[in-house]
Image (cartoon, rainbow, N blue to C red; front, side, top):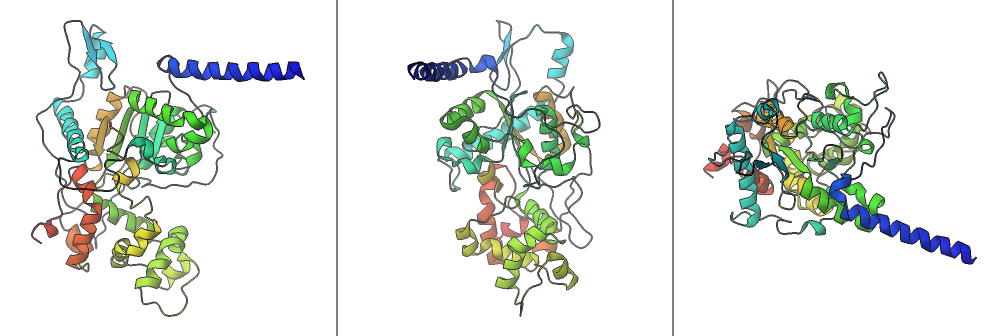
Length: 414
C-alpha cells in the first residue's frame, strides 16, 4: 500500500511539474494541437453559413446599397529601426536583412490596405473605449467574465497561430474551409492526406463543429487552465474576423433560412412567427415542405416583428445567423489584428493571407461575389413601419458603428 501511495504522489508531482513547464515555456512549445488528423466521417453539422458567395439579390428583391468605408491616413506596416529589426503585426521581432524575395512578399499589399485596416481597428477601439455615445451590453465586460458558451465562434489553429471568429452569412463557409486546411484537421478520403485546397473541403464538413477547436471547448480539455491558455493565445496569435452590412446580412439570413423549406428553422422559428403574427387559423402544417406547398411561410415583416418582440429577447433565442456581431465575436475584449469586410472580400482575403504568411500554401476559394443594389431598402422594407425601422436600427446600431457602416438612407431624415 505504501508503494502504491508513493507512486501516486510521484505521478501527481510529475504532472504538476509538466504543467508548470508548459506555462513557463509556452512560446517555445507553440501551444497545443488538440485534434489529430481526422477522416471524413463526423457528427452532423451544427452550424451553417453561406455555402457559396452567391448573390443574395433576386429580381424582385435586390438586397443592398453601396458600402461606404471609413478613411484614414494612418499606416500600420512594419517600420525599420537602426538595429535592423522590425516588429510584425503580432508583436514579434523580425530581421530586416532577409532575402529580397521575402521582402517583396511582405510588401506586396498596398499602403492603402494598411491604412484601411488601421482605420477599421481604430474605429473599434474608439467605440469600445466609450468615445462614441453608442452603448451596448458587454462593452466594458472583461474577457474573463464572458461565459464559455459564448466563445464558440472563436476557432483556433495552433499550427499557424491563428484565431478566426466566424460570422454566419459573411463568407464563413469558405473561411472555415481555409481553417480546415491550415489546421490540417481533416483527411481527404481520395488522397488519404490532409486537405490542401480549401475548395476541395465539402461545405457540410467545414460546418461540422467537431473538426474545429474553439475556445468553448477549452474547459473540457484544460479545466482550470483554460482561461490562462486563452489569454496566451489571444496575446500571441493573429486574430481576424469578417463583417457585413448588418441589414444586408439580416436579409440574407431571412432568405436563406425562411425563403425555402428548412425543417429546423421552420420548427424552431418559422412556426412561432406564423402563430404569433400570421393570423393562421387552425393547426400549422407539420413540416416545412408541407407549409411551403400550401403557401404558408413567414414574411419578412413577420421576421422583423419577431426580432423586435420583447418575448424573443427574453427567450434569448437570437440565432447565430442574425445575432449581432458584437455578441458573437466580442470585439471590445478581443483585439483583432485584421477586420475584413464582405464588400471588399477579394482584396481583404488576399491581404490577410499575405499577412498570415500562408498565401504560398493556399488560395481563398473563388465564387460569385455578393452585390447589392441601391433599391434594397425600398424593396425589402416597403411594408415595415418607420417605428419598426428605428427599433431595428437601434438593435443593430452597435454593429453599424463598430464596423463603419453608414446609417440606412431611409432613416437619415427621420
